[in-house]
Image (cartoon, rainbow, N blue to C red; front, side, top):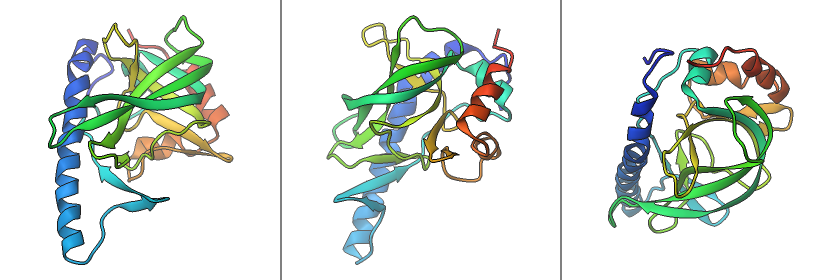
Length: 210
């Protein structure tokens, strides 16, 4: 488990490898789905007419508490999604992943600083043949979504985009509740247990990183 003083330089080095790991996992998932289909079964879930592909993302991070998550983030914002679009292709032709570019209008900066009123967040979007990805149980971000994002810079000066720190770093409003990644992660369960206002208050009272 990383400490609160984990070297931020390492995070910039793993941005693309993490997405490539998702691409590899996607290829495995598609191969499994193809085998299931040929045997008469079905894999994945249906979202409208599109079959989504569930995959897991490799990460060097597994935070045990909110303080660690905040200190590992370059920026934490509360906001609302204004738009989504297709981004770059990552990986080779056999296991490529197309990223999703999410434009988040910043309503409140909870940690760190940003000079703009909106930020671009890059996330795993689709398989090379167009199937939406569900990474670590977190559904694809959609226009109109509101919530809290724990972000780290990609180091890509051409796009100025950010990525979510790991699967523990995105919480979307669903009525009066918050929804994080699925699974039995105790930190995700803790942070999604209250309202978005309660989580925002907890973050604002957490000491920033070094």
